[in-house]
Structures are given as C-alpha cells and as structure tokens.
Length: 293
Length: 160
Image (tube, each protein chain N blue to C red):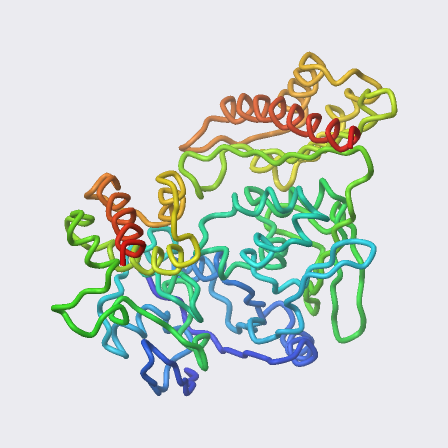
C-alpha cells in the first residue's frame, strides 16, 4: 500500500499556493492535514499528480473573533478543540470536534481540510450548515464568501473552483435564548458515526420553541438539513412529544440513509430519531438555563 | 521524472539528512531510511495507531504523513524513551510490571500516545485512560492490562 508518484510543492505563503493553484488547477490537489487524502492515496483510490501542501502556510492557522468566530482553514482540529474562544462563541462546534476520529488524527487534521473534503459522514460540514457558517475562498483573481448551504454541493463535492482554496470559515454566534447539542453514535469511539445530529433550539419569551435546526450526518449525499422537522417545532411547547414528532418527520421523511455493514438504513433512521430526541432535550435544557441566567 | 527532495529531520534529538521521494511515507522513512524499527506499520491508513510517533511533541499517525512534511521538524519515536535497555523509561517499566503487552506490536504506538497524555493529565480516571488510548488497537490484551499499566505509570510518577 504505497502512494503513486506525484510532484510535491510546499509553499510558505498563501500567495505562493494560489499561484500554484492558478497554474495547475484541478491537477494540483491541495493537501491540508491529509488525514483523509493520504489514506486514499495509500490505497491508490486517489492518485493526484501534483500535491500542494498547505502545512507551511502559518497565516492560515488562527482562531479569532470579530462579530463572529473566524477560523483559518489550516487550524488543526485539536487547536480548536482546546480553544476558549471556540468554547465560548461556537459551543456547538466545540462539542462536535471531539467526535472527529481520534486525538492523533485531530492533531494533524484541519478544520478547513475536513470541510473541503465534504465527507457526508463527517461532523464539521453538519456544524457549518447548522450554524449558517460562511466560507471564504480565495484565488489569484479574488475572494468569495459562500454560505455553507451553497458550499456543499454533493458527495465529496463543494463549490470550490479549480483555482480556489478555502482560506477561512466564519461561524456566526448563536442567537439569544438558543440551546445547542451535537450527538452521534459510532460502533467504536472514533469510528465513522452510524448517525449523528446537530440541533439548535431557540425559545421565545413564553418559553415555547421559536425556531429549531436539525442537521444530520451520514444519511445522505451531504449534511441533511431537516427543515420540515425543524419547522414542526415552531410555536410548540418544548415537550418530549413535540421532539418525538420532529424526530419522526426527520428520520422518516427527510433523510435517505444508504445503510452499510455497520448499520442498515432502517437502523440509521432509528438511531437518528433517538439522537434527535436526545439532542433536542439537551438543547432545550441549555436554552432554558441561558434564558434563566 | 521522479522528484527527489533533501530533508533534515530531528529524531530523538539526532539530526538525519536524506534525499527522499515525496511519496515516501514518514513511517517508512523512520523505519527503512533512518533505521529506527521500533515504530510499527499496522494498517497503513490511520486506523490502528501502531505507527504513532511524536511530531513536534504531539502524537500523530506517521503512516498518513509524508517524510518530506517532517523536514525541519522534531520527531520522537519509542527509541527516544531510553537509550539503556537495562534502564527502562518509567512508562515502559510500568508496562513491564503490569504485563501491559503480549505480542507487543501495538505497544510503541500506545507508549507514544500515553507519554504526552500522562504529562498533561497526571491523574486520569480509568475512563479517561480508555479514551486516551481509543485510537490504538490491541488484539491481544483486551486492554485491561494496558489500562493497569497506564495507572501504574501515574502512581510511579507520583510516588517519586
């Protein structure tokens, strides 16, 4: 199991990396943390002829706040996992990160790399959709800001153009009176999850559900945003019955799990429903506590 | 056609200079070029943890990195724990005493995972130890003796 030969570039600056992307386009595959790409190369499932290694571009490693949480694309996941700004301003992201593989992988894997890889089974795209994150992309000719919903276009596919790199992700703060929860179930800790959900729940001044968000992993071509299930909660009392109704709508009507050796499609629906109830209960508890304080 | 690049890598405090193909995996560099065969190659796709080494002090999978990416960086492998076979590192000694291995194939990766973990978390609970080693597969022990060894290592550190 050895990778096929390739030509290797390791630019020190974003500008140099963009020059290479402009020159080589799709042929020049960007290498971020490599925790998905290099296994694929070891299996020779991926055989890029040119690799542009972004690991020496320190200007893309940062976590800041400026009206929203801003994370440089090459920030390693373990840095965000232990960052107080992330904990405070993007608690859903903070809760999701420890579910990504194992600590050794998170020491190398990057926030931007996982998002650009767009694996439907991965956690970060789900978090991006749930939080309405925005992606800043850059090429020689300029930059673009893309909404998460426009960025993920399908199975392992994004709206990134052949000469572009993902350089920054902007995570908006949670609205007031909003609780959050990220839950997933895997056969073994660190494995790809059989099901998982990011939930947000906003309460109105009467303590009823004002709005909700439910986004699922590994049950479709990409993050599955269950809008009907979320809409069913609007104006309702945050009861277990209401959560069960939402769970049923999401798991029966809004997802299309494929099933695999670890979990049949029916079992994935079952797990998704259970996780929906748990996540909504947890999100409600957090929203209620934040409202009381 | 094939590109050859010069690299300088520090492994266990020693400088290594070689010319390598970019596709050479870091673990193969460590074993076959630098000659440090204590690091093991298991699954070769980042799942089993046998190849775990420290990269600038942090545990990483050396089978899903390229040697060229280590240019200018500091690595530590299991050989860096001690240079005297008669005087094991306290963590190794704990594995010896608690029977924390059978075939030993996974042990280097587990040691390199636990070394920085126990430094940062000197008094972990059993559940925390199990979480810390969850990225390292062992097919012999059933993990119980590995957990015992990790606990013994923390006790040794506190008693000295």
